[in-house]
Image: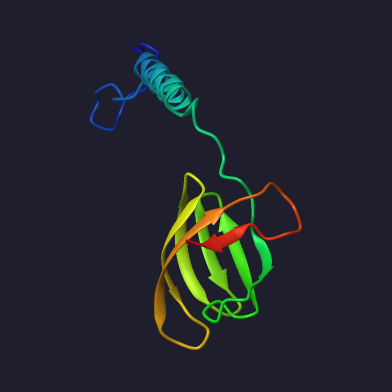
Length: 124
């Protein structure tokens, strides 16, 4: 006699039959919806970091005459000369720079300007 439910090899009903599987998917869907709402509400006041990556010129002996600024959101790297890794916070870059000629110096740099061709960096 068949009841229409899948039967496992031991003769018992399969543990994830039709109704249980449907309920499981509904629970997972509700959890994903709740996680999305929480994520959206938590990040609604966040703003992207200003973009300023590119090639810069400098008169600093530490930075050399030219260097490259690579940016990925709030994470900033210097390359093509000096080496440095920073995290941007409120238009400030703080950290240590490995100078072109060797050695390292503490850096407290501020990002200034909005998309001009003039670099908006200066050390404090």
